[in-house]
Amino acid sequence: MRSRRRPLTRALLAIGTLLLIANGTFPLLWMMLTSLKDENELIRMPITYVPDEPTLRNYVQVFEQLPFARFMLNSAVVSVSATIACVTIAALAGYALARLNMPYRRAILTAIVMTSMFPALVLLVPLYRVFLGAEIPVVSQVVAFLHALGMTFVPADVQGPNLLNTYWALIIPYVALSLPIATLILTSFFQLIPKDLESAALVDGCTRLQTLVKVIAPVSAPGIVTAGIIIFVNSWNEFLLALNFNTAMTMRTVPVGITMYQGEFAFPWAVISAAITIGVLPLVALILLFQQKIIAGLTAGGVKG
Image (cartoon, rainbow, N blue to C red; front, side):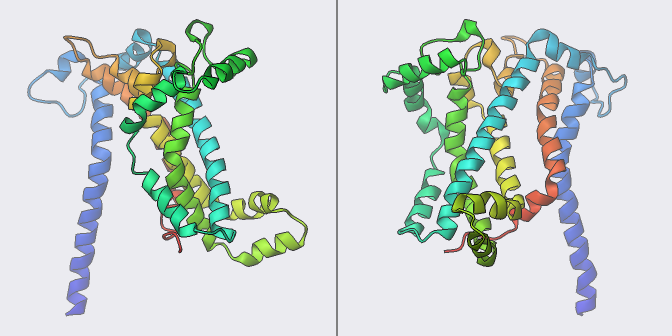
């Protein structure tokens, strides 16, 4: 009886796997095929699934109609900066929670989980007022100092006495929003590392920070990569804060920039599909490049008490 059930179970698992793969890849494939069609073929009936005469004109229009290259640069700068800052802070916090005898450690982990439940919409108005300098007067002084050092990283024509229309307006909230999940992932990984490695490094004269950088971090590479990919993807795809904080054309990010191709009475499906395809490619490349480490990081287990 068991021998008969095994082929059926394998067949059901294979079918389920194929359905999951189709569910994940079909929208991307359909979008790419749409980006290769002209407007006439898009409205033709019956629908053509594969373009009769593929064209790259839509990809050219993506860069001709709007400064999409600038949108890509803005998203890259914001996402990479937020990822590096968030992983660094999360590594320090995760190491402290996993290794140091901290009081109320469970309460701290619970608080971290609770903070991750707040949506970005709740923070929109308070953050806007803070970056505008209306709530915290010292913000204006900090911004003036950053402008003097040239560290606002925006063209001179959009600079002002606040953090709006700067990379900082997105980097700071992106780090804060991604920090809880990154801390939980890294805490879980650090707890799985044998303490003997850390003890040996401390005996050899390493400080706690040196032990984290030279011993713990290399062993925890799958967890660090997993946390970094999650932060990068969330920062790259974020729309609400980017729409409201960076309103200058030269400071738009990819998700916001894609919505600007739509007109009042027109919706250029082919051009928008081409823009989405270009915007998704960096994420696909990252996931394919680090897929083994991502799988290892996601299957490492839960946070130990």
